Image (tube, rainbow, N blue to C red; front, side, top):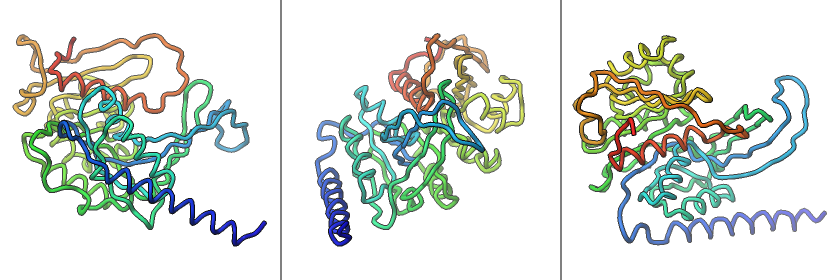
Length: 319
């Protein structure tokens, strides 16, 4: 093989990717309206491998592989935009094919990408995901360009029409700190939804307290709720988090369905519609629809999108 020719091909591919990315970013955004919801979190391209079983020390066959744009907040924003909600996203991508894929995915549904920062010294974040025949998964994160997110990439002002900011985890400590300080400083008119995920939950309640105190809605799994509070009883665990300040907690519980825990709080009166006779603390359970599980990747992100859509339309929590 001619190595010189090989190197030229690489440079050409990178150049093509950069031209496409710059072209996408230069296009006009939301000529019809500004974003109601803005996402902030990791931008990753998911490399998903289907396997017969997950192994910790052994070998198994990969039966299928696919590559798609991902990231928790990105998935939620994508879904909302696809449903017609004007959205934007804040984050970092690399100057590569994966970054191009992220941009094209957002552009396809009309997400405003002018707050995306291209990092020339980093590759776009990647997640290597292995999913077995039961839908169980193991995810491994290569943060890449997400580690470049700093206060400089987080806008000091947001459009007056923006009603929600949806935040999810970032791998680096300095990135989490920048996101936390930015989120805390958001104007009171903006409601915050926060989905910490396993990466943030592992840091413990003391670290996440400022996020939870500022949030209007907290999205967690049943296991994350228990780990975060060290309380096994669902209602008691929710009350513990409500006492920090978050009025609404949405809990996903797999085949068990989902739970919505609501506690009356001054900051929840505007976006959340509840029956006038609602108790001080209400815990509502919604059973899961019986389906054959193929892959749970992104399920919680889609759940968050549906919840936010209902809140944007002021649908009652028990609808």
